[in-house]
Image (cartoon, rainbow, N blue to C red; front, side):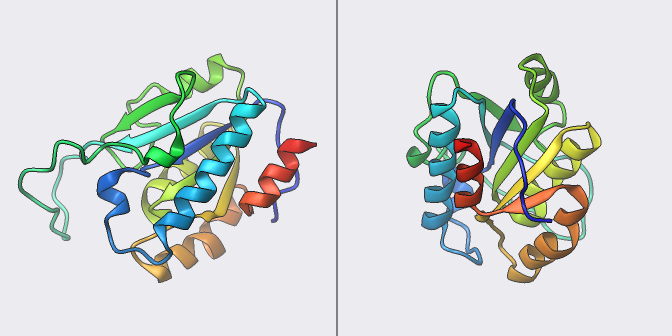
Length: 184
């Protein structure tokens, strides 16, 4: 379902647009993803709506079939893209799992602000973005996904999330469609 409306207290959640993630090989140009996410952040700030910037600083413990990268990570690997223009009023969430709500206090922060809807963008579509969208939906938030402001390491996984998963969690739209709704 295309994006139809935004609640009066909608927050933007930007997932993992940080040095280490932006350096990965992805399906769509990261420069365009960051540019669109930055445009959304600017539009939300102009309307005094909450902006949540999320970075990842580790992963959940446990065995998986896919090996995780090992070794020492660069000191600046969690630094957010400068283009996001982090502002003092932005809320920073550092996560250690795929979803931004797990053990971060994000739910209570948003509910304290009266937020009833979230717009989610970032990398990776099928991992951090989808996990955060699932959690937001399960917590009772209305969910909108900015599909041209996200990408994935796997083009098929990206397409699957957009075509099959996101319509079950909320509405999807482009950056411009979301900005146009904010202007109403």
